[in-house]
Amino acid sequence: MRTLLLAAATTAALASPALAQTDAQWTTPRAGDWLVSGRVTNVSSGTEAAITTAAGASSGLHVDVGDSTMPTLGFTYFLTDHWAVEGILGTTRHEIRAQGGSTDVAVHETWVLPPVVTVQYRPLTEGRFSPYVGAGINAMIFYGGDDRNGFKVDLDDGLGYAAQIGADIGLKGPWSLNLDVKKVWFSTDASVNDGALKSDVDLDPWVVSVGLARKF
Image (tube, rainbow, N blue to C red):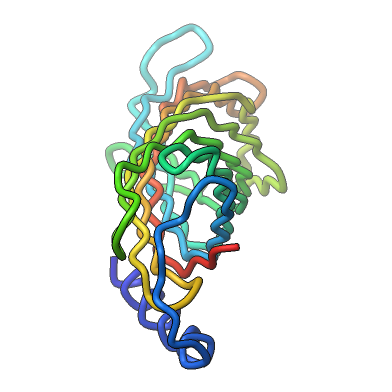
């Protein structure tokens, strides 16, 4: 949260020159408009999936997936005054640890490309406040993996689902402050040391973003 608040302050500071160049009032986007958002995004999974042996017996360990905060881009196209489609583009890096009892060891680090596409409903067409809700699909693509401490970890790519709530708050001219929260549901099979250990990991991360949007 502290990182996102700092990002909001930084975004406002960087936007000041652009905002100072116009006295025009912000208006709610309408059919045919685009909103392009630059955001700082925190991805937090909070998973603690059990690790079992190849035979299915408990290992006494569970998986912990670390948080990650990175810049992302959002592209929203308004199909009508109330309905829009959004796609986000970004990548995050996460540390995976095996924990349990006196054990707490890093086993893998991986980059994740999690494109999300949602359909949004925006009830308001007037004023400076444009809230929305949305739902859609996401992909989880793992790449650039780096095994740690003698472990070998393989993660399966796949598809999941996403729900969304957020708002654009008009500033000046085409500029607005964007606040966005997504909940993603995604499960992956993790294989450790060529299947000697395995885990069915429900990542299900919260994706929380703050940034600046421009209407086109």
